[in-house]
Length: 63
Image (cartoon, rainbow, N blue to C red; front, top):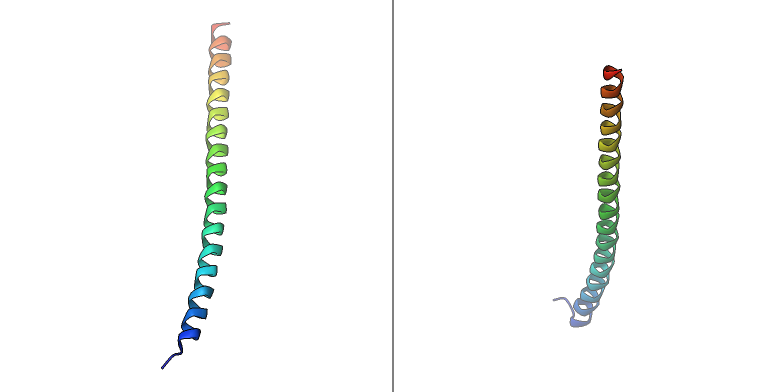
């Protein structure tokens, strides 16, 4: 039979591991949010450049 103290020690080890995992998960969530913001910003920049290209192409064809 497994001793009570051993079970309690194992439980504490697992609780500590869980805290580490939760902290890592929060850090990864923050990284994902940051990457999504960069993705959105890059898409906006691409769209802005597309608009500028279209405007210049229209001006060129009208000349």
